[in-house]
Length: 284
Image 1 (cartoon, rainbow, N blue to C red):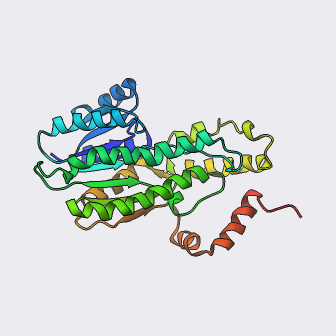
Image 2: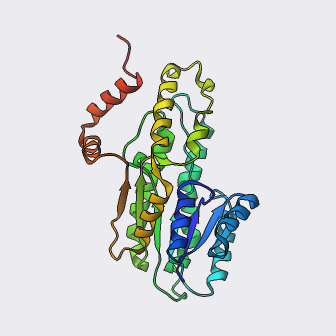
Image 3: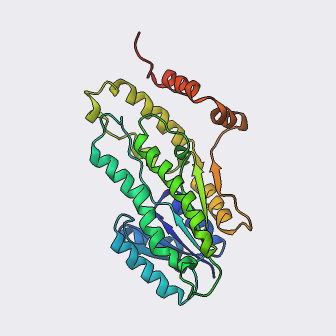
């Protein structure tokens, strides 16, 4: 049976991927951050999954989980690793607390770094294991190629993940381990219901404060109208199993003309469009 490690399976993309991959015959080792979430994950999928309790920023815990998976595989290689766990820190970069930026980078960049180092031997970097080399799928974002205002920390982490993935893909050619990036747009999850409760009063003295409320409503609206998590799960399955996968898959909802418009519009023109939409143009 093929096996895959997915980080962050409690909700969202990770949960959708676990659903699709177990239906396709994979055994999923899924990371969660609490015993309560581990029990819920096991109750939902039964013997098709094995919960792993760790935070991706805890290097020692990540390595213990890798040892647990190694023991379960009994000398076989791991078929795939999906670096999905992540958070989105928002706020004006000029007013953002440094610890918030640090937390963003710790989870979204250092987390995949720790997890990749710990599990790469099981994917085939350890030549003593039997079986074909596995693949790594890194979940980036449309924010990894296009940064929106007030999502600077998140965009910075995803741009970094894109560079990390490209270098990693070329380095792991030595072991036959492929690396594929998936860059989704908004995905429909419960997080958007909670986003309406985000308190922006911390920025009440910021010149950006009048703009933030409008940004929040636009951002939440796009999220609630996003792609179903299972759609991303299907794309993750394709990235793990296609004979010749692309190096990067985009998953952005919308008509082709709209996508081309956003992709081809000159950056200065896009700047002006965003400024007009959110009210970021300077007062005259």
